[in-house]
Image 1: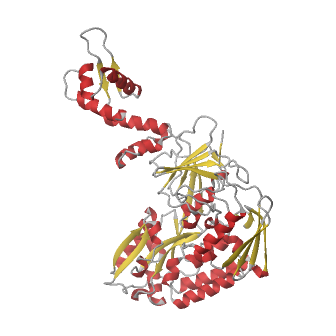
Image 2: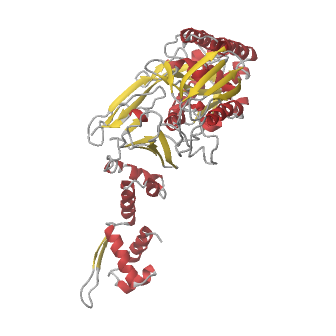
Length: 569
């Protein structure tokens, strides 16, 4: 029996008794020997749960002063938390007890003693699969970028691709063949060598495995190998059509290189070759540790702990925090925290099911877009959101005209599907209120991220509220959005889908990024002006860091690169 359970039994035994029992009576009540009672009382006193004054002399009784079991339990849990044993501390708590313990976090989240430089931060939701093949949402994409490496990376400062696992690449046959030269001496986190066959199998897996982004790699015909793993070996990717975006595809989180031999729990405990290796992943905490054999410079932090819990109100006990705050929060020492804010690259938008009678024509969809004008859904004093008139913040493709009467949906029943996050549900409430004002009845369906990828709801739903956040590479981010937004493409007409495919084939054949961006803008304008997609808002993303955290740089996904962070002494 656990010590805290023995303590609860002792507390119950003493309740209502006018005199404290002696050791024989305690031994009978706790079902153990008098010697074990002395041992238990000593351990409980060490925990600070009681004060035990042993009596001296015959006929004198010992005196016990006890805390309540609830207080004792919270003290024990706090001790576990201070020791970093988060799982034990939170495992047996209900929601109210967990919140009480969270409120005490500032007492325990100082920098750890010793030589370990560690960062602690909270996550706003549980993490799903960390297999790069499965990654769809930005949280998992950010973590995958910390755990895995890719053939190339996109450098935000220079707006260019830079070497990663491949130190050089070039094309021939007008962009239909791409050669990549691998660095020698690469290894995975478990010590296994990262070999050319791992890269080949990764690329073929992207092409052949059913996944959200599979269509981006279907034109890969073959991957040929030459050279030796001990030297700089070459991989040659043969494509079915010219594609100057192929190296950009190799820089995405989904294209992270994975071992060809993977364990059954790879989705939850993956092995990569990135700057951090995953050493813990459970329902309470994810722990990343610096990979000392990383092919580039080692990360400056030793460890990153990500805690799956909402931070307490008021002071911010965590070293790093993502998400909105109306003011800069105070650190646990009372100092103002550093805050970065930027406008998201992408937008939150609404898609209409054109295969349903209410939204079959452009006229119907644009009438809805006017009724749901962004300023009717966003409060004037909302500091975190800006009305959208295009898919990107600098695209001004259509301004809604909200002055028109709207009676088309009076008496109609609609189904709205939304991702079940706090921010999306709040916006969904505003959309529903506006639709109800037009006389419609709205059924809201909240789905977790993994269920949004299924096709079950697409047949009967009328509207889908979604969001797209592009990564560092805005060029390929636009291509990916047009090519892989399955709801947008699924609810388009066949004619429009064929047109989008034709445009994307022409875009990937353009060697110049500026020309590609102009082509995306033209395509986005057409989709907005025909009501296939209704942009609603652009969101400001925030990162807050404690004063002792340096190297803070915000990524377009709204997070911070862990490998750039360090702790001021």
